[in-house]
Image 1 (cartoon, rainbow, N blue to C red):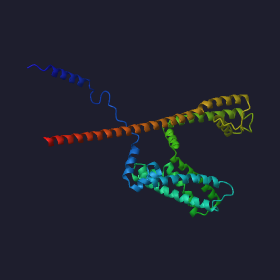
Image 2: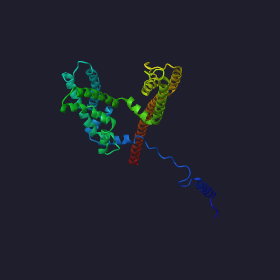
Image 3: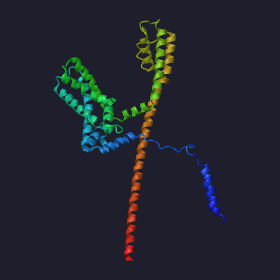
Image 4: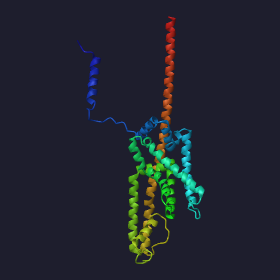
Length: 342
């Protein structure tokens, strides 16, 4: 019985497609799905949603006040205000004639601030497992304690507490006053620009280090050359290699205090060459930082647009599903009415 020509043609096409298909492990590999960089943030969101309500609102008050309830927003804003007020108070206390031990309002304010920062530190240790969602609770708390911001949080209240148990001396008061400036660093948590700067430094670490190494090399070469040239002419100005290094630093950075200047013709020629080289080299780190900042803000805007588009598409799909359910319900009602009529 003759074969159906359509079946033969179909079989030939399948055989040709099978031959053209690459064998397993050979040819072009299918692209792997990209791992999202937000795995840590996803784990954090899952832990936050799985925690108790009080712990979740504590996390929002300290880390993301926009998502918290009214009380969490009040606590977060009050903490930020307290940090700024401490910075202002430290500037006031450095004035002569103001003694924090004798001034009762200032002493009470610093005491209350120390207690508040201690409570904040304990709360941050407690919610560390929510902030570092990809770690165990113990690992997350150790990670926060030994992180730079964790050490800053500790130093914001620990030196002041030492004065409660140690005899107060003028040197101790001065040291505590200086360490109180660390409290101002806590403001970086609430400023987007500092976080962006950290991301830029992390992404462009090698380029930044390479540019600074080239600048340091230029400073060392310029200091040695200028010391060897100018020391015989003015030994009181270029009395050591450190004097040449000081001249090179202020020349390369375009500061130019004018306290040390070359006076020999060769020294002035070398100084001019170093100034011209420094104009190009010093601009390299600034260009890296500015390009990184622009790229970070552009990426942030793109992420926002993607979230908006995703949100609108989800709403559209939900509307379509709701409309489909309504049509299905209407069809069922019409079918049931038709069956009842028959």
